[in-house]
Length: 584
Image 1 (cartoon, rainbow, N blue to C red):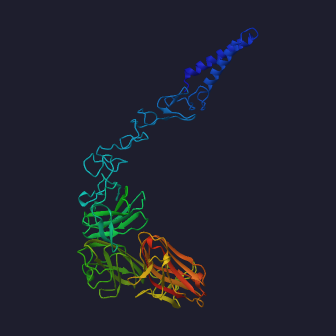
Image 2 (cartoon, rainbow, N blue to C red; image 1 turned 30 degrees about the vertical axis):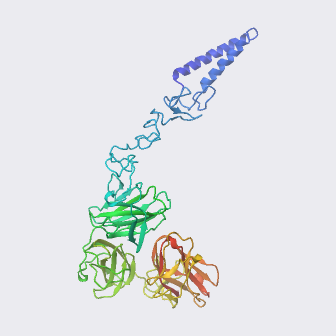
Image 3 (cartoon, rainbow, N blue to C red; image 1 turned 60 degrees about the vertical axis):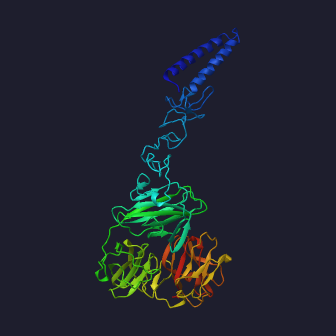
């Protein structure tokens, strides 16, 4: 940079140079040639002094940052020690030279992380001081085997070493969310083997964690992922005992994105100690993984112990406590023995009711009174029924353990003949179909069923097309058409097709069916008169419930119309039931 005294000196030098130049001119004819050379040198020095600070390095300048501020790396157009200066513009302090300059918060002379001074010379957490600071997965000052010397976490691989996810020294805690990011240990000596989603899964890489529910009953939402996406496939279990043989609260086969497992538990009792098992399927253990647990506290409602003592509740979240397991038959068919907890909901009119019980819970629905019509029941998956106006009794069974439970109940009034459909087109009253063009759909009585498949004993005339001849595809199972998930992934799309249908005399055509899919893409396609298949509906991700598709634009007044349900089995299971092809 240039100081004030330097500017005065420069002005004096310029004046001196001007006088010298004039004298040289006056004696040019008699003076020696060396006088001209001396005048030229003085002029160059004066010009350089004038340009320092103009932001452009000129002859003789090491830097020029365009300002006159001191201690910024460039002073009198010379680079200061410990700074790096570009050809033009501001200088930056050199991080790693053990000099704290400029905006550096620290400089410890190295480029190591987690030693108090980051490689970019900013302050960071001090590993080993016993305080978990920003940027540290853990810091226990060497007090346990869970936290490495460099303040990285290691995951537990056996029950006795299970880390507590709710410990703020190990997890990042934000409200009711706990995020745990460990580096794994070597795999457990024995492979993890436990029932999950009705199947036995043996996985070589297993890590055990502990979580203590807070002071109120709560449901848990869990997500485990391999952030590096090395192809490992996580699976989650939540158990009330650490051993894999103990009773489970919930378990989840892989779902969602390929490197993520997600799981929601029933409502768990306050202060319950649960064990969370994260296992991975792959040729190598993950380098690291993330486990996120979100606790959702609930208020308990006291149920009736018998149907006649069921207290009234709103159609919303229902939760309470069961005395113990009831031994409900597999598949959730309505048991002969009575539920262990009862609630009562008053339905204001003819309604479509959806009961969504949590894993491990069976919901049982009765109309009017304890000896009234059994509308249906569901185990761990939503069950949808039509209820008349009046009293609806909801019984709850424990499918596995006793303890807290939860289910969600929605009651929506059904739509009468001639009235506009609801947005989903699923609430038309009995015997009505939601049909018509976009914006003008209404619930109307169909004139007849061209095709009906209930899958009571087989695929009812629908045909499974085995893509690629790999032995995978649609099959009949448990009273429905079923496309089972496949691991490892199958690349082809398996199809279930209707026989050719004749719609020549039909002014309007609608397709009804019920379905549920865990993840991935599912499609419905139509082909008329041998034309290429046209996609008419698509679901990306989880979906469930009744579907009504108006196919008039593709199928009306056409012969040899066919329908296809198509999906890749690797993206999650898909079941289809109660197919009806209706004219209107």
